[in-house]
Length: 412
Ligand code: ZN
Image (tube, rainbow, N blue to C red; front, side):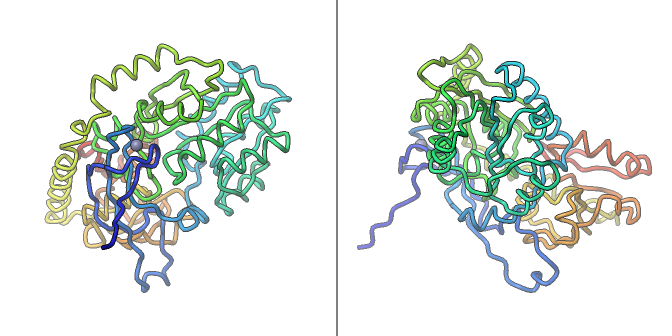
């Protein structure tokens, strides 16, 4: 008899994971295609969201090898003003709070194009970026002068850095913990690379916002985990780190920012205690909290398809804004393709000229909107709605409208 072993929890290795939502098989959300690749078959992978009743971690079951996912990652953080401003704000605070100076070291895991570390660099504080995507690490070095190690971060690299005299006063990890297959390895690495009084500042998508605001499109193969403070607390304590402070910030549709330090001296602050208590009251550590999410997503699909179908029937022309990973999940799962949308625009020059995975929409520069004049733009990067609506004021002044799909369809 074949012994079939199901997936195990990425945090605690518990085996009895409970299904929340299945998005079927989809192509990789960031696997943009060249014109030549349109003729080739696309690889697809199952996308199933599950809940661990033992440690409360919400996660997907499939692990696509990181070499496949991240080596030529197309997302440049600096193309979003919101992301750069968020980074500048937290850096300024930390320099003051931690009294950082020319003897300090700020490390960022998955440092992208140096969008965050540049703010330390400008103040004369030594930095080290760690970024596995070779093309993006090159941008950080060449355009921003940020020393960048082109590797995946884990306990081994952390030990090498410490042995080389590069222990960190501050470690940043923004939207990286959700991406790593070896969750415990990365948290162990953070515990290793921190100086005794160092602080890790970590931003992760907050599962409470995902569920409450129907942000199902933030589920894709790059995002392996969806965190509550409860799940993070259990994970960090396993590695002798204490979450001493926590903030809820609006970026990326709802983010938790935690501040963790060594258990030898740090204790959980009031904000941590109170959010843990709130989460217990909401029941984020119980399966019941996640029931009904699938039905909510189906209702959203029905209302968006009805809106788009109605507009097409009236002869309206529709395109999309934002060739984002979340856009890929939404279009593929809802079955919205080239028969509905003419094209998609995106500010990232790396994406322009390529095609969206699964749906094969051509990706153009945002300037083309005024020339091609669609009536509606489906906003796939709804998390940057304010920023994008402001940039597209001329389109709107000329009668163009945006359809914002999440948390519920609205036309603005
Ligand atoms: Zn678990």
